[in-house]
Image (cartoon, rainbow, N blue to C red; front, side):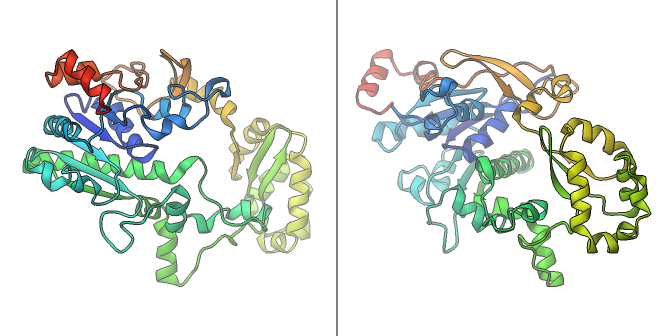
Length: 403
């Protein structure tokens, strides 16, 4: 059985995280994703770590390697006359174009949605920008810190139990470019929807993705509460008792909110008498004596491992969670059994372990992904093989900085 997007060609003219993550998700579905990079320098993600051995190298960026599995790479400068002509020829054959240029920039180059639609009416044109293609802030420049906080999400962090533990900490941004990945997921979702619509209506369309709105959409319940109930949710929300507790090898979350949960927890702790103690008899009394409740729990967790605590408490019905670090995840029997991590051999970075797609198709084999391409690795195949240039022409374009 073919992969869902076998036969779909994607032209990716985007860098860093959001656009390339959209392309990566489509590549995971079997699309042929051709990544267009700047001659000489390539995607900006190539300069971001981590790097094997902490030695910076444009072909060994952990960020780039992860985001660009299963893609091909060509180098091309579409701001040049010949570069634009070659880009147009590639777009004419594509089903999807992903771009993240400032609004209006692609049109200035003669590569905007309306211009390319005239050559390829079935093209799904996906634009990923900080604030979208329209509105008073459309032209604003922004980094992840800006769009994440512009979404309202940053204002609530750290919240809940984290706020209770670190009340003096100011608002924070989502770690590891979280909002960029949000935008990439939304872009991929919009792309799939537009391709599905194309099957019915016979033509492509422009998919306009705002990074701000992508992250905002994930916390819409919070804003619904504010609008409908007048309840302003901010960082001060916290657990009146329970929350994050240190243990021998990290942290766990324990939240015995209900009477039955408190009774279950103290029984596991070997102190069942605390369930009948007037200080902790019901939720109201536990709130009143919250510091004592937390001190009792903290004393119990201090010398135990997080896996041990989770294994003891989880079956009881008392809310519990452990804070897994990267090594915990890498060694997780659950993730190993589902082969979520796979070894991929890259010609420059060597053999590294990657998280792969988080879903399975019952009628498809789980093949190992292809490594991220070297910068311009497929120039010969694409420009000579697909577009018909000669090797001499390719060499000349390279010397001119077009490719």
